[in-house]
Length: 276
Image 1 (spheres, rainbow, N blue to C red):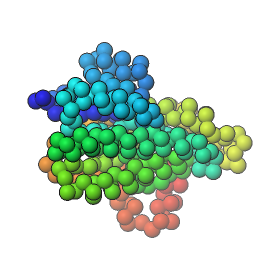
Image 2 (spheres, rainbow, N blue to C red):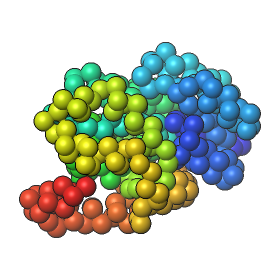
Image 3 (cartoon, rainbow, N blue to C red):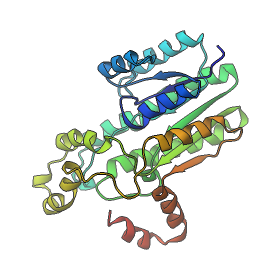
């Protein structure tokens, strides 16, 4: 096929949805996957091929990738692992099941789809794996321990894979967004309500004064927030670069945190992040 192909996960809204349109406008053959079938149907109505891929469902990963390969005669130029979710709450209040569930999606499912895609890319002799991490993939923050842990893990896997793939023409890239205007906050509310018994927590007053307000009150865009298109532009740059960088940091917040993490001692960094 003349057009390059890309599989993007988590395309129901936000970064994935914008990336699907941006890549299609740039001439790529886009496979815009979603976790839920109704979201896939919506994207199909907008002209996309939309396989259902739920990172927590191994069968959907295999079937979704098979649908892509059937449409491309067995090739895939790029994979953008974008799908993820958050489970807000203090670390001491997170039950084991909450961590298991977020790792199933944010780490294990990403890993499984990546290893399957790598088989295709090895056979064709080239490819690009782009993993969407976060500023919280290299700095921690209060109330976000589950998400932070999953993104730290994703960054570790991605770094190791990048080094291992250095003897091939398969490029492995991280994109690290900061605050992006999406429905990520709203989507995390059901996870919080399912897993965190905040009223019986030793931190109940802090929940009431801090986290609950952030979760349930829409304060509008923050000063440093950028639209999803800022990630799409970086994705396109990473895919087109002859020698892409290992990391692309999106938003001033991410870039500033990267500098501070290098320069400041841990206690000073903790003091900044604790304001959070």
